[in-house]
Length: 62
Image (tube, rainbow, N blue to C red; front, side):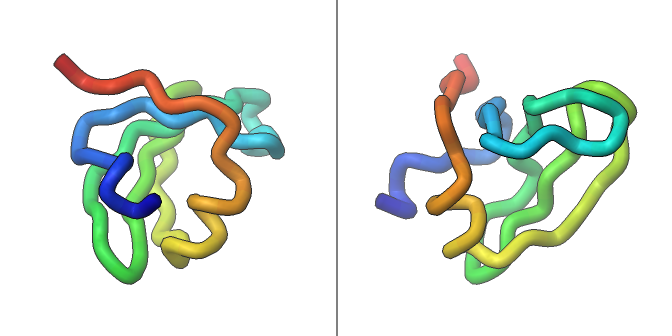
């Protein structure tokens, strides 16, 4: 399952960021993911299991 995430992908999460955006860009993949909010640019570190559990959709980078 973890192999489906790549740097540059846009993932749509179940719960929105406080700015209202559901979309996050994957900046780093590992035990923790670094994600950047597509709406406001805020960056966070999230445990891999939370990303896998809460992702609704993945838009693959080209």
